[in-house]
Image (cartoon, rainbow, N blue to C red):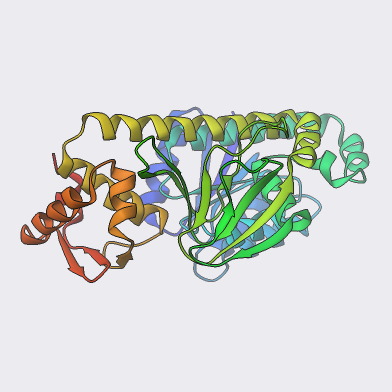
Length: 351
């Protein structure tokens, strides 16, 4: 039976996660903070560590740094659990040597899958540690282990771009020779329908990839990408990315899974546009923008009515009437272009 050290200061989350792991046939040792976590790691030498970041006394970064400096614990697989979703925070954890990074709230299957994957990888690496050390001296592209390290590659080796709000990242019809990682801000992709109406096809936030069409460089972009707010991006050529994917099956599979999830989101959006009521479309679109813009319910969402209508798939006039109804019902507050969610649960339940 494999042993997991779970370091988490939230008592309820710690107990619930420990119970989940025990039901999955793992032995679980828990610690309420980083200091005790380091102590237990050096006493029991667990098979894997699952650790929160924001904790009293010593945070998760400090725990990882301490274990990495000890020859007896430096090779223990380490997974971060954190509510921090910014690319720079994920990057910091991966740079310190973490094997994976899951954001809260996490899906149970994602946690178990990450643990199983890292344990399996640890077994393989321990069978031939000398070979691993030799591989660490190879080219950086050969040593990419997962999707987070691919993002680090974009950050380190890509061309950094700054695009002002309202300007385009790329235009429909241009050759799609590059792939982008969004480091900061929000980008929308959009295209014109046969009636000349501008339709938003997707919204991208920090740490998202965009620009995928095909790996054949002769294919043009099928939509335009425009900055919703000032953005920063890292750009890598398709040729560079293709070389990385050819050398790393793991990264290829993780990227394929990510793109599959993106397709599922597009399908759900199309179903919403086709079958939902105007009120439900409007409510879901407000919630979608709030999520992409990383806004809390009490924060204002500054977005144009045209963009809201475009994502919802309804006429701007219909959207404005529906927003007025939501305001009257006490679901939202409106001031100019700003929308504030007043009743999150009621908005989620709109039919």
